[in-house]
Image 1 (cartoon, rainbow, N blue to C red):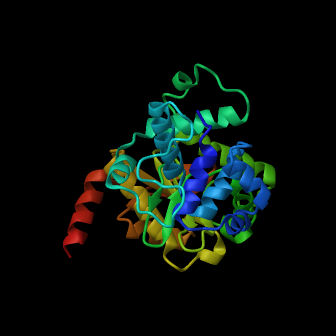
Image 2 (cartoon, rainbow, N blue to C red; image 1 turned 45 degrees about the vertical axis):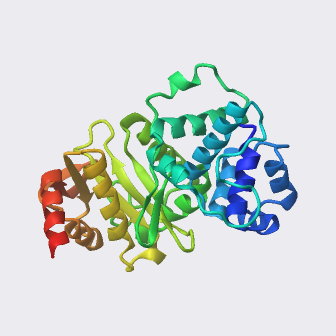
Image 3 (tube, rainbow, N blue to C red; image 1 turned 90 degrees about the vertical axis):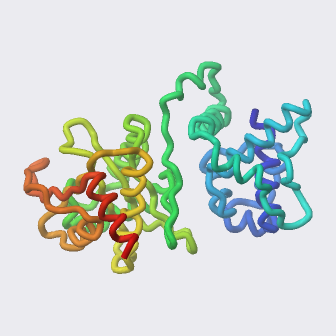
Length: 321
């Protein structure tokens, strides 16, 4: 099923007219190692694959669907070397055909999810014949984009930046639920696992916020509603160096739009410390209003919120301005 992984990587690199040596340098791996991947001599681990895709500027969706096209085409022709239609492996930059562009937009999340998860099982040598049925209810974070930012799935590759984010006392000072004290690496790992697992259990969760131009990790934005929570909470946290540029509002606006317009959520809340004026201003820019005061996990917090009808009505009025 994944014999064409290397061919897919080579194809995407060719479409971007990127030399193999330069891609290897950007991805932080050896050129000989990348050559093994592209020649099909070795299947990359998922974290290595993510490094290569990030260096290419390719989202996981684009990669796995291109792989699906190549696999499908090869299956029809009965030969592994077959390529996806209109996607040459060499000859310079080639635009995607209208057929492929349409396919990218129409492919279901379940197929993408299946490919990604089967890939992990294949690499780890534990592929199960029942895997398709085991993962039918699974969810992955969709990639969302704004003018300056990319909201993407969190991954193990984000752990270093995530731990650094939660080790800054100034970042945590007014953050509801963080405890106010810097986290150690173990706690950061466990919380990252919670965020990833939230997508699987609830079909909604958090994204890594990435700068589109530099690919820097800015922070995290998204939703959580574990058992006993007062509602579907929209929260955001950015590293201190990225404060003051409007990135939080830009990212949170996109997440909120997705929850209301795509997932049909009825209401969203944000739990904010009374001293956190920055977050209060962001909430107000979103159209959230103060709903009530509450005590949550031993802390006095402000509960801001907005419902879908009010949000969409406000957005419509804003669009007409």
